Figure 1 (cartoon, rainbow, N blue to C red):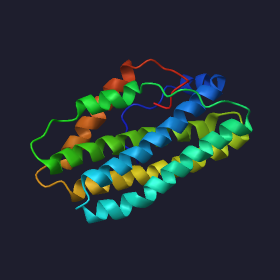
Figure 2: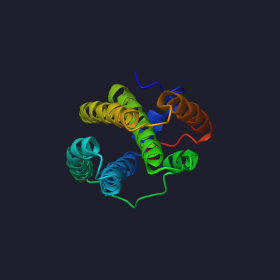
Figure 3: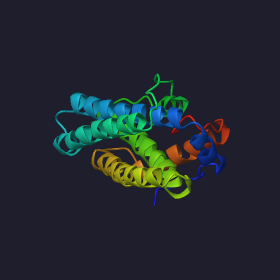
Length: 193
């Protein structure tokens, strides 16, 4: 369904379980960044009525997710640590085409957002199936479902606003790049991506 070309390394779940405070901290900041990304898209493209209509509730949802992850940290007597550089996201951003038109820039931003949501969905699925803590299995299953819906929405919006961009071709280029990226990034249990 997601089209990702390289699954998460199976060792990642074991590492994440050993770094629960760090993975939850990183997850919280991923939700915060998803919130600000949606706000930024709305601010940059207020004339795109469907985008504004569809992303407005996601702002609230993503901020709610941030709060849920912080509550999970508190429930486990863990602390929200500092936000760290997200090498995965920064690499995806560096792959974005520097385009001529505002609409083409929008499509690039939507495709990057879709890919981040797809990888998050895949990671949350891996956690929901393999982590030993039954409460966290349920916790991450809910996030997996939400991320899948966001991934699909970002792709749909990219196709709607594509103009002269071949979205299917560009999406495959992103998937190929992401496969190569995942193959070279260190497997770390303290990061969602």
